[in-house]
Amino acid sequence: MIKSMSYIERMKEKVEKIRKQERVVILAIESSCDETSVAIVVNGRQVLSNIISTQIDIHRHFGGVVPEVASRNHILNIIPLVEQALSSAKLTFDDIDAIGVTQGAGLVGALLVGLTTAKALSYALDKPLIAVNHIKGHIAANYIAYPELTPPFMCLITSGGHTAIVNVDDYNHFKLVGSTQDDAIGEAYDKVARVVGLDYPGGVKVDRLAQGVEPKIKFIQNDTLVNSYDISYSGLKTAVINYVHKLKQNDEEVDIAQICSSFQHEAVDMLTKKVLRACKEFGQKKLVLAGGVAANSYLRGSLTEKCKDLGIELYFPPMEFCTDNAAMIGSVAYYQLLKEDPADLNISALPSIALE
Ligand code: KG4
Ligand code: ZN
Image 1: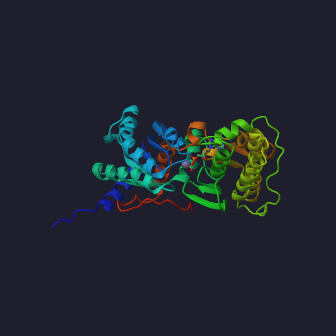
Image 2: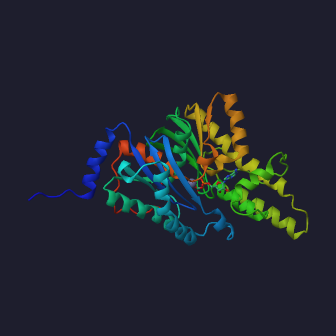
Image 3: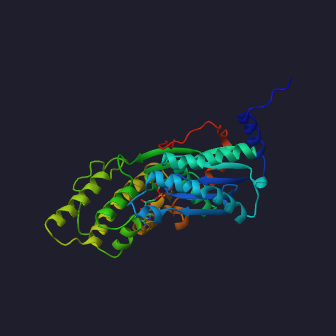
């Protein structure tokens, strides 16, 4: 009797064949937070389509992302987006070699929508499933934007959920140099925005209000992590919140632009000093920014100036690739497929996932 191959054995065999192809087409899905996105990416670098449906307007009413509401909207969006991504790339399912999907980090219910869709597509189409770490996706956004960019490089990840300094040795090798001990920088931006009355997501509004305003307030008196590569944002965030509450209690005027500028300078300066020290220590002459806060004008401007003085090449993703999108997931999936086994159908969503 001929024993039929299991799903995973078949997928491993397929991956072996795909690795020999000159052109590898990946359909990628991202649903970790409040953006549903589906993209078609060729060889990890060429984006044929990248359709993003954001739920920002829905969550704005609640002052932040409501996980259950996010999951329900992902369910409504996901299949139409798969169809749209294919038609906009002028491809059919037959042209796809593998399915890439965000497995974590993120909101568990939101992740499950993308993951379940990806598993169903993989099984029904008999095409390998590649489970991707969302944070690696933010790093890979730069591979799409800069065809000439290759590892090694130092990477500063600044997103709504993560803040970390990572030494990227290779496409699939990452060394965590330092990370936040508490809040992520984007989270701190959003909380400060909320306390001064700006609606969700507040980061970009803080950035805009701070522009051209000389910072005068010093919120943090003593940074205990000054000599470490680790970072803390909870002290700075609490200091801003207490400062605003005190002004309000005393019926004093709240100078929102001044608070935004002073907070932004401290939040960003803390990071830039550490990442430049890391570049020196690890001998990296390339620095790459990743994540939603990489859109911040002060962070970009300040690092552009400092990197120029130090002879470091600086890369930051264009705005459309700073926030969550599936194209970046398709890029990671390609490099992962070249080196690692595909995923089995029993994998779970991983709300917290390590980078190394
Ligand atoms: O990378 P992302 O989509 O989040 C995660 O994957 O976790 O980034 C979203 C974060 C939000 O906190 C948002 O307020 C922040 O990025 N953000 C900014 C700016 N644009 C987006 N923060 C500061 N300045 C900006 N211009
Ligand atoms: Zn993200």
